[in-house]
Length: 275
Figure 1 (tube, rainbow, N blue to C red):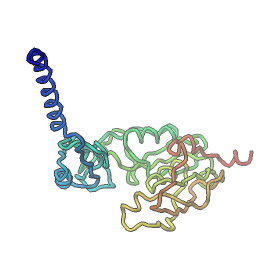
Figure 2: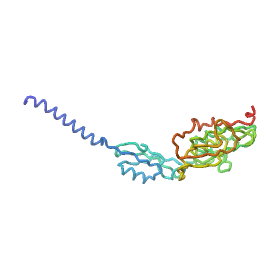
Figure 3: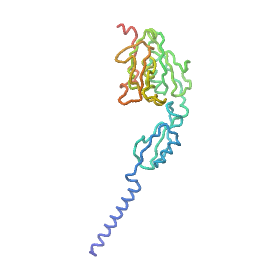
Figure 4: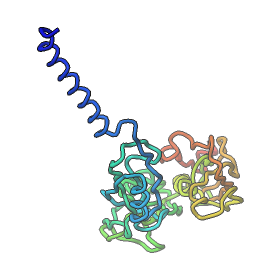
């Protein structure tokens, strides 16, 4: 036994060290100890920091964007996402809603196709408020004027990102003669509906009802469950109106694939209809 002791002693010491290291590592990494990341969207920085501090988490603002759907200075996005399990002490990175949108130069989208103009505006962060049609058989589907708040806007004019532009587009026989395919609005939010209607060359009639809508935020996130006239390959006069029914019960409500592709909303004139 005495002879084996010198051989067993190093093994015992190594085992003790391994056990001690393993225990320390479990303590240091807080094994099996996690915190659930709360939903911080719409919260101020102070509110977000307080919510995170209760769960032993930290907050760090890394970026800002601008949206009209949330209060200025509030959290727009977070990483990790809400509901994720993380280790205590983890930093949650926040993107805030800027108080003012960025300023950009207005592009020149005249004398290009409606589809190209809308793509350019979308890339730059500008919205299309509506598409107006005017008789001009030599410039069918070409943008003749670009308007901001009802007035012509020159290329290069400084404009807020997110502002809405009206496009005046040439039509074979004006609004009365042109025909448009009825777009499928089912599953779209109210804001997305406006984009599609502009691309299709028709207008929003009335919101007949918004089921479950109690606040403005409810309306913003509600989706279309019904429309009149229905899509189903029907056509209508360009500039006509479509009524919609909204609901906050969005389970199973998804927009059609490619709903935001301008190519899916090409208009047909009265000559095509006759042929």
